Amino acid sequence: MWEELLLEAGLTEREVRSLMILGSSPKMKASELAKELDSTRLDAYNSLSRLQEMGIVTVTADRPMLFSSLNLQQAINHIIDMKKKQLDNLVEGFSEITDNSTFDITKNKELESKIDAPSFGVLKERVHIYRRLKLMADESEERLVLLLGQYGILHLCRNPETLEAINIAALRGVVIQVITHLDSRTVRFFDNLHESIEIRHSDELDTLGFVADTSEVIQYLNLEDNPVGRGKVDAALIIESKSFTESHLNLIEAIWENAVLFETAVARYTENQISDPLKLTIGEGSFLKNISEALDFDGEFPEEDTPFDPKAFFAAGKEVNVARKKLTAGKLSNLKVLGIDIGLMLRQIGNRVGQEIAFSLRGIENDIEFLDEMMDWWEYAGLGVLEYDVDPAFHVKVGLSHPPIEDPDALPMWEMDDGIIEGALRTRFSKDSDVVIQRVEGSGEVGDLWNYIIQKLKTSTVELSE
Image 1 (cartoon, rainbow, N blue to C red):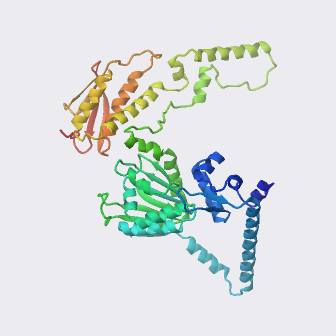
Image 2: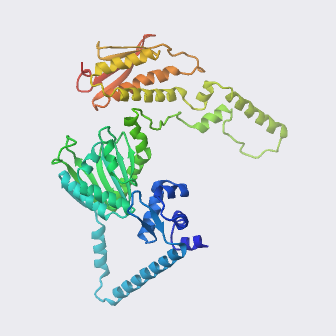
Image 3: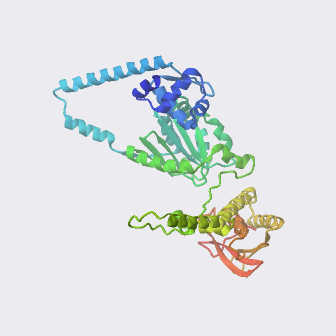
């Protein structure tokens, strides 16, 4: 009964459940509520934020924050009083408009048009940009998103008033999300953010900007090269436009979904391992078409109904069962028939291993020494022999202990082996946008199956430090 009344009052199901839980267990952390709701902490904060705005939920200034709510009867009475006040204000405002003979509806529409029209401006110098961010944090009501790139957390921590405003916004229930590109030198600075602020890491993110609610965006146009500089040459565009902000948030959502949880990403620097979830591509094309062909079914049905023939019916079923049994024979080639490319998957796993090798050797500045260490690892693992040469261009010659074979049912481990080399080289040398790594066939001999040529677009070959 209480649930129905609260739903009728305009609360969502999750908000109603939150009230039911808080009513029986006062002073809960948001993480505890999220567990009871079987949802994410962000969802819990969204519900708590709206209930706080309505005056039904209160929060302590403790660390961590503790949430409490009115009991159900008090909550209903509070909502009724609030609705009555809103209705009274609506009636009063309507009376004033209708009684005012000078009210001009055309002018009112022009005023609304001016209010909704987008506005643009340019902010120069980091101190002014972060002063505006402080204002955004002070005025934000629902959500604040910070794109901090690689060193934005340093700039934020060097502006303590802005940092404090962001943490206070989090305390009052504003959902704050941070997308960053973690660096071993910046990890510790994230401890200055309130625990309710959700942080994620993205390898692809190198931009800085901020979004408040659905009304305002700050996008950096220029950033000082020195990450610890004073930001005298920093410049940012500020856009106040609901439609632009909503479009920007849609883009941020896509980045957010693919970003890695902060705790997982930090393991790179605490455990020296890349433990992010590995997303594999298992194949391409129409899987419906693949499985239909594998089951000897052409997808065509009779145009007209035919009399039921038990013999034909069971014969057709038997044909499909026979084809189905063939697929369970445990052959790798059967997976290929279904569109599942084991070679591609193994290569992607190899790429990840190569990335981890390059990451573990990131402290080696000398490129030749890096290659020597990588070759030692390769040979010690029993995968074959790697060599490098500068004639005619700088290249790495690949030799495998277990070269490719033609058997379609053999596990293509050579794909993973080669993926390791590819992942390590691309992680190490493709950090420069003008470097191209090309894979070309070698002589075909076991010690020279193919080569990886490392070239710069502006010059003939990459200049490796020696």
